Length: 422
Image (cartoon, rainbow, N blue to C red):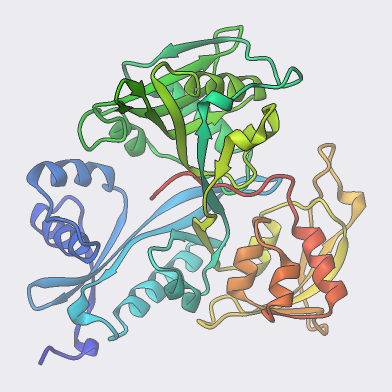
């Protein structure tokens, strides 16, 4: 019988320690049903995660549980990016499940992040039921697109596809600048660090831009990059009838004109009948630009980025609001990290020129209007989850009127979107 969980301590792993990283990485890949890392994998990974925090649990000489976290930025509604604790590679080998290892690793990291001043932690959940127990809530969602290229015709009143397009054969430096500008303007946008783009620049089999992949940059009339698309092609035919497919891996633009130009380009490639895209926003603009919006079929809507509030006053103050009103919120945290009762006061006098309003957040002993779990607040704070729906599902303790008021305060013009895996 293996030793008890209490005797298995948490330990830090130095990404620069080759042997320690190999043991950590081998275990984490095994948990995700992947092959053990090669020496080339270790070379690349040690650079990509050099500044990350790695946690391991060992049973004897073997690593049986892993966790990786790092500091990043996530864009809040109306207020731009804030620092977040990004959580990834949370694994426990099948031989050591149900011993509390994940709970211990996550709790230790969340406590550390809160003490470091983070109001949020974020992750992408491999299995949805797990992370609600730790106060995380699904905060952004994504869908997939299947586009019939033969039916794509843009409306006369759609933004003009001005500017120019060019293939990118070298580094994606300008694409990185476009992404950084775009992610700052929409709730849910996540920072892509230098390691992300360094990896993206390496092309070939198994890479983001594979052997059949391309990157195209859009420039405005002044020559400034304002959009890009990364895609791959699959050449297919039935007899002599071509039925090729383009798969869009990433398409980002900072202007409607660049957005239209990139979609017009990618859906008009010769010998291709279908364009597919994954991890797209649930309120994708493209169908609204077409004479036949049914040319774009959307797939299932899935949760993507999950959020975890660590500091209730800090989290509510990190964003701005479009509605006005006052509500007293009592937040209940199963881990005891973020229990709080606060007054959320959004007054029209604090409205900025852009229409967004700064809130006044104060702790209070007043009777709450809304009682909710920290996971529910975490789902609501980016504006991508309906407070009315949560109330109807029995997950908010409040009146119907207060659920409507909460929905009005938290609503955003665009659905939050995070297309970045981490």
